[in-house]
Image 1 (tube, rainbow, N blue to C red):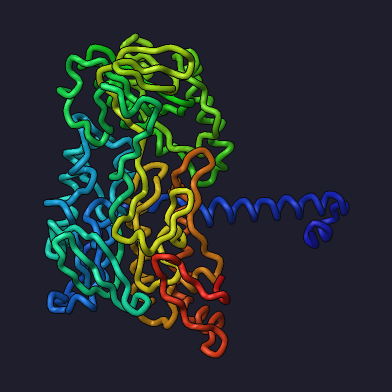
Image 2: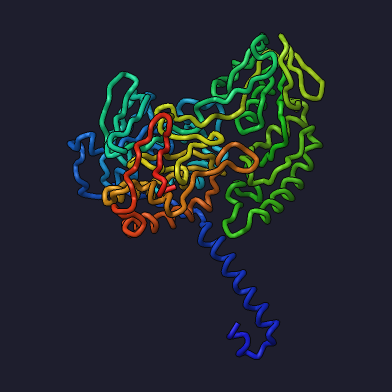
Amino acid sequence: LAAALLAGLPLGWAAAAALLLCALLVYAFKYCVLRRPQPPARLLHLPEGAPDLSGVPSRQRMCVVGAGFAGLSVSAEFSRRSIPFDTLEQDTQIGGNWHQAVYPGVHIISSKSTTQYGDFPMPDSYPDFPSARQVMDYLHAYARHFRLLDHIQFGKKVVRLDPVEGGRTWNVTLESGECIEYKGVVVCNGHDWCPRVPRYPGSDTTKIASLHSRQYKDPKQLHGKRVLVVGGGNSGCDIAVAASEHAVSSSISLRRGYWFLPRTMLGRPTVEIFQHWLPHWVQDKIIRFGLWTVFGSYSSHGLQEPRYNFFDHPVSVSCSMLQSIKLGRITPRPAIASLAEHEVHFVDGSSMPVDLLIFATGYHVALPMMEHLVEFKDGVPQMLNGVTHPTLRNCYIFGLGQARYGAGPLFTAGASVLADTVQMQERLEQPVGRLLRQMGARPKRPAPATSEVIIDPHVAFGQAMIGHWIVAFLPYFERYLFRPDRDPPLHPPTPDNPSAIPASAS
């Protein structure tokens, strides 16, 4: 304002220039600092001369539960930081859902660059949308590169986690009955393994066969059947298209409108078009116009129009389903009202005979090994920032939430902050979660149009950058936020009060 006045501008113009400058600074801070672009992937290696940690007792090790996409990234970061750890995996090999729950013809729906880990690029020979087999080969190469197989114990299903002395150590109980004492736990059991199956009037008496999309493995399951798929997510679209090719008939039941995206736009993977420096409402308008030019209105396909903003719900990446509808191979149906013996009745009064119902209706977030320690609200575990327990030391959940696209770069960035936190906890008297809560950290909330927590990658990258700074200053925060003469000790959580916090910390 002073500069404008010195330049001889009238007061009104000078004030307008000052306001415009302030608006630009706020915009730059929000969209260029708090929201960050995806960092380029670069190949990292284990440090030379790293100490041999094989002789470290278990009570001085971290326990990583799960060796899927999330668990591997945490394990690799711990390995690079020389943090002693074991990874317990209930299956016979790594990969999680990519090993257990894929069906023929599956390819990633994001893109190679937004799915690969930030510390281990996918091979240049891979296409923009690698297949499930290529993803599994990549995960095995990742595990070999960081020597993770030396730390992973297969066939070890964790059934219960219990803190000792507020989390100074943890008792990890396995399905076999064995109990191992660890320094801390990082639960990476994933969010796409506990199927959500809706109930309808007649569900108990119908003779229609049914399965969840997680149980679909082979097109032979569709042969000779009239198939109705329930749900318009990515799996639902894929299975409906497969049924249109292998079943007697294929229909899909949708209770509301969905956004269906093509895999590519303007010659690039669609997810790579999103920009961190553009507000969501601007990108929403651009994408709506692009989809309208390609598909026209969804009502012209017999589908409901979406009634929510593009970024408020997970989107479905599928051109094939809309094309199959236009070709008459898939019949869209409204929501199910009830089930009869061999028929399905819909809310618009219509009905159809069905031999096989396939529920592509998503998953519940489930933490069976620590349900006595974590409070749930609206289906979301109440962990600070979705990761840190609010009262217990060395208790973390990693990898929950639905990324808007991709996963690998988010896991790499998040695992780095998590490793900082684990190392910093050793220097603190208070649990990290208690400090973060005093500083304003809160659990994640579901997106407006869904029960799921949606992770915006650009926001997550910004939070990771700021997270490193916050963790580095935690000793100073502890010094000023907590004093032994003022703050009472923490009350340990109980089954009746899983998130016990003293009054001074609430």
